[in-house]
Length: 101
Image (tube, rainbow, N blue to C red; front, side, top):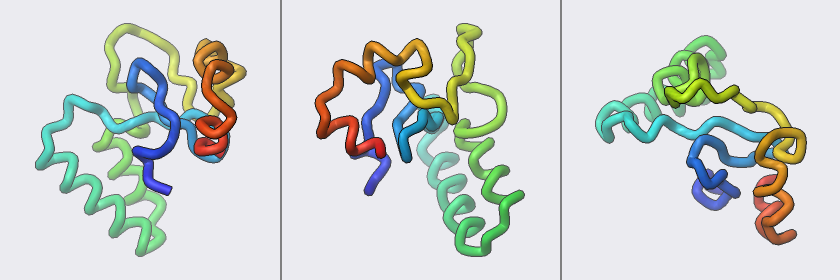
């Protein structure tokens, strides 16, 4: 399933995949840099190179320091119901929540 089909928090910081929050790509990254990093990520995954995967995810803002500047905590890896996103999660339809599982 494509990332775009998964539930995304209203603030654009996370999507839900396999039942947990995953950080979205930094929207401030220019298109050329994003495409280059995505290509590196796909190549690293095919090569099963964990260090290169992590490096590409850091370039995309999906790992490493958070890309937002308001000091909010990173809830990556947590179930939405166990975070401040619990109300948002509970208001999704059953079908929408299923897309994140």
